[in-house]
Length: 126
Image 1 (cartoon, one colour):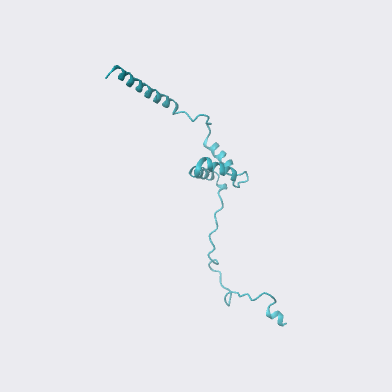
Image 2 (tube, helix red, strand yellow):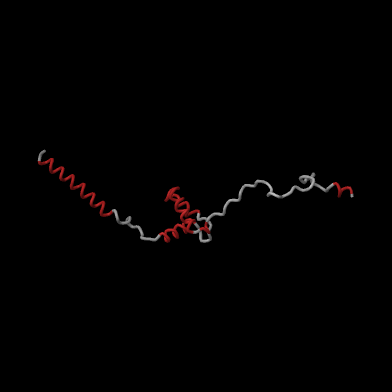
């Protein structure tokens, strides 16, 4: 191995070690320009982005957050906000109509049949 090879190896090791040290020096810190906020503050921010003050959906804010967070991120944020503020949950959908409630009896003589429009025959004969 020549002296030039040894210098090249030493230089490569120095560059690698220096890059690793610089990366480790920045890794425990927060992202640049990020704010230090609590979970409650995050929930309040997203509540205002997803819902209007009256509790109705904020379509504009939702669309922007969907674009920014993607579907999975948006779903995670939405669930967190609704869990923290249950009053914002959408009302449950009513079950599909499955006929009259149990115990509701049919009128005597079977179902009511409607005739053609106009006066009934009883009134016309009178």
